[in-house]
Length: 188
Image (spheres, rainbow, N blue to C red):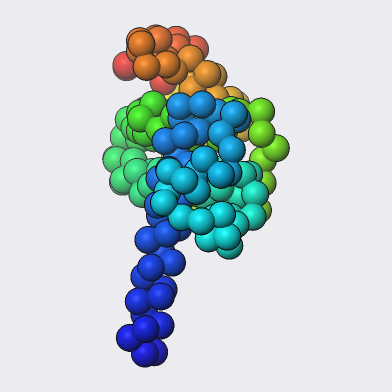
């Protein structure tokens, strides 16, 4: 590969990263009102560059979610290493939600009214889900959580907590405490 090819690829990567960063900020601030031309302007790229990387607003949201799931998968791997199954589950759920609390664009992408296009990030979501399922199964088998708790319940719990997140308070933590007590994952 020649030096100009490497520079082009690095430049394209910088443009893509700038687009995702700009979109994350704007989606976090204004949700679905954000327009693609505003994202391009904030990122300092032209519309052609924006559309070469992301054909639709939904594809851009999927990229934001994909990055978050990649980070959450690493956090889930660390939670899986915790010996106590109840503590492992608690670390998984709390880590997921603390990451979501810091990422309004992720919450918007998950909870927002936009049509979801997750095909491009199916692998990231599947890797996270596989680890989460193992952690949940281990907590169930050890009697730390209800015997009927599933990954689908994990999704419902996280969406409920995320729906209660706002920058002015920590009500989502109260929500999570109630959930932990309800599913039997409270302090033992």
